[in-house]
Image (cartoon, rainbow, N blue to C red):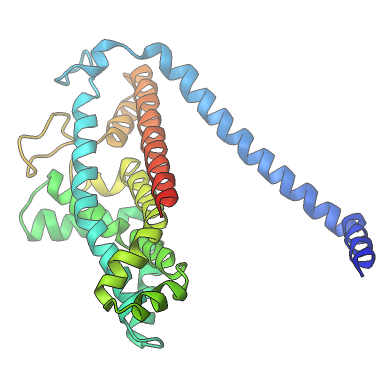
Length: 285
């Protein structure tokens, strides 16, 4: 029996279609890797030589085009957006997975809606934030308006990722907890949620990446003022908008490449730290 299985597997590998699929898969992987490496090398070679202390000055002006205000604004917007979105997304996922009845039509509507919202272009979120936060609520072009717009934009992503992480936990964990006399709430937060944390953190990483690289939604809500905000109601540009502005003006192309290098390093650091935290939490569970 084992010999027949090996013979069949060898025949499948020798089949022309199987060989063609293997070539296409390897070719696609190499093409993707080549494009990524070309992009990284292009940004690094054009940006690193133009990194200089004036780019990190505390105040922005036309001579130094400092990226420090944009960097601080980026960190503030990321912090506010995650502070609003992560609890809402995780708690919504807990309700959908642990408390909602199976076959509930409302749950299916929520899931379809979340998936639909994930595919909406960011410019639409920007126009929505402009109408709601900037004009209707009277917040103006501000850090808060931009943060709330991005919170709405990444909420479906974090909610769906957290839901998938919770669904991946075996039901035997829950049944064992109930058998030992634990309640529903204790089971969710002490038994189910800890092993699902690495998966939830993966969604948070994706959300951070989308926030850091967003421009369209923030131009209509946070504005493009290149200064450190006095409050959350002050306007301010992020690193992505700073990069876009320098590139579109055409007067500081070298500084734009240097800003791209800094933005790339920040994204890599965030992903690396988050990945290390996820692995540590996974080993702890």
